Length: 310
Image (cartoon, rainbow, N blue to C red; front, side):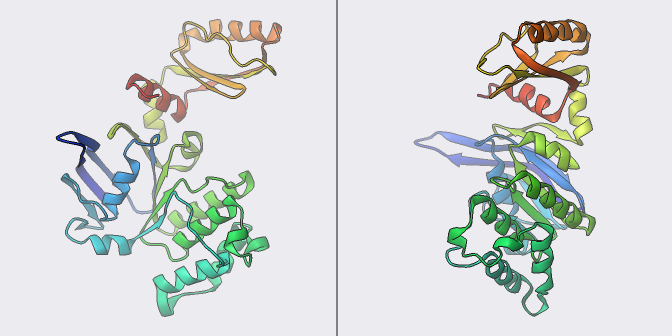
């Protein structure tokens, strides 16, 4: 086991005598070669938890063991074991991606550094076109991929990726996930910190949904989706110019993104929902619709909505 966290709680002192509980009795573990998804919106407590894993913050209570040793007792060791891609963009200045990644590799591996790994990563991510371009001239996506390469050029036993695909184009996102999976095939463990639930479902081996400092669900994607196993997901594409539509009264939860409307229903309501969707297609309100089993996103929306998420 790479990581074992038990009862991790972090309380920050607020103004006066007030207190803010950032992490509330969190317990989880991560095995070798596993991608563990940590899902939650901004302010859910993800960054606080990561900083405790790295030994940058001390838990108010609880214990975190990294490869069999306490992070609390050996915080410097914890940081040597982990590789991190932060959520914020890394300022490269005049450094090119190739220079930045090579420098990081030499810092971590020293005389054992293999420069061929830089070429391998750049080829795998199709970064050759701007490998020698000054960082200040790079797009957001190019800088994001550079930061990823800096984190994995000499990966630790645990790699922590905070929103690794932000600003990255769809094609290179696929390449990036292939590189991440290769890392795990070689035995490296990965923590994926994200609010992109749809993307995470396709990538992770296990997942935990964090909301207001607490885990609302945890397990494999199938296990988490099993909590609403009797539900189905309806997704419709709204006609141009139609911003709102009355969600059927039998919908359990709903989510509206641009021209897409998604909601969950009980499986017993499928015939009625299909009739409702066909009627709206006939009226010109919908372009098309689809019905599928519930997803991690549906579980996420349902659980966080019940807890008062905005």
